Length: 618
Image (cartoon, rainbow, N blue to C red; front, side, top):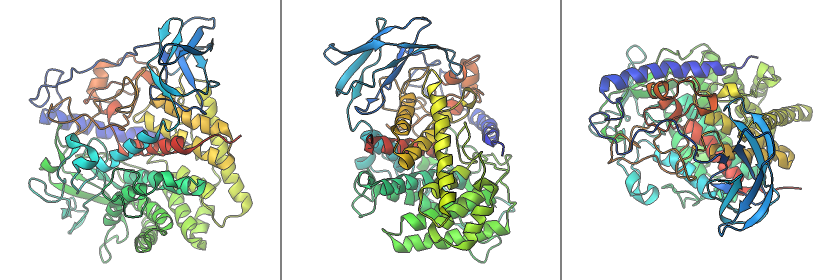
């Protein structure tokens, strides 16, 4: 089956046009001299230019992991490198390997490999041909704080609850948003759009999706699945203690439930509320999304949003996202809260039956006023994903038959070079069936596991043949490219779990190198991590660039990353002619390269947890 990634790009173009229009009308999108009547405290940056030709993971490297750097040089001959410790002493040395021109970045690159060095410490530098890299650490525990911070992103994106200074820090504390307290109109009693339904629902809670204050079932689905899967995987690997109770900054810490599951439950409760009630038309289906009637201007804190909120019509895709995540919930939460697990399973069964009865309720690309469309014209992959989760949880024949009769069950196109995403969810079903014990024949499970490993081999090949360690091809620098990098890194992590072959663990860890500074811009895309990092991501209330009284995004927030389509006015103005991997600008107005989103931070958190708790097996 053909990759459906172009559908993802199409969804964003529609949303982008609406957002440009909205921001222009509200006066919130202006030039660098002012925004919505406010003077930015940070000068609008031009396209990022790397400080050093020696590109490293600016956070650092694990003592037992891969340690590689990219050096930008047109020299055809190897270059001498030295690894210096904090005192300036040379602790390792060697020669680079010339790699030639890199298609995605246009850079002429060399590879410097210092993996054999096993010392630890802080303040290392790699010096190549007289040029020094940014400083970095080599130490165990490198990724523990990144996991905690990348998960705090979700807490701080929570709707319907105050964000506490004791958990998020004073500058990020805020009152609860969208609880019906003036000037908010919702989300405790939200009506449908005209002609969709004649009642209102309480759909409080959940996470704000991205830089906007909408809540979308399809994007909430994959994000929730990734967080719950992170815990489920760790439980199977025997490393769940690191993801246990009181490991994160969440209000629920101390309740004897793993904090990752507490955070995911905040979204799961919202997803359950989005189900059409019994006795109503399309009972059991899920409303596709809920957001403002028109795009909210930047900046707007959630509790100050005066826009009316609306439920958008149910969709088959949203209903199957609910079925899949609720079925996963029933399985993973059962040891901690049997009543909640049972509630999830009831909702999952009801959603599956409703989706089977209404398989053609497609969310249109045109529904993009006030929020992203998240249109998805093909839902056979969502049917496969939901069936896989329901079967893994119940072992029932009806769901098994739905799995084995799906063309996705034997498709070689489940894992694509571009990576899975909110509109390409068959890979999630494949990963579940390959890792969660189930009743499929051993030969079938072996085939599914082999397909994961084969996909990982492809990503390793892609990663190793490029100047920078991104497991995506040069054609995949689209909206949210960093999430595709992370998602493919996740597949490498699962391949390691299945095989215990170090090369897959190394590939997953090296994917983090790209996100944390070993890229053509020499920029860490994660706020607060590295010597040079993104800090002006597109967001309604982490909007310091537009309002000095508001903060920048908190540490652990992942920027969307390079997008060669240049789908916002800032990118169009500042990045003409950019090479695909360089089409990024750290400006709050560049929503097509520099937004944050729950489905981008979720695989970052998954990878950070993986990197933090794994060691080589020889």
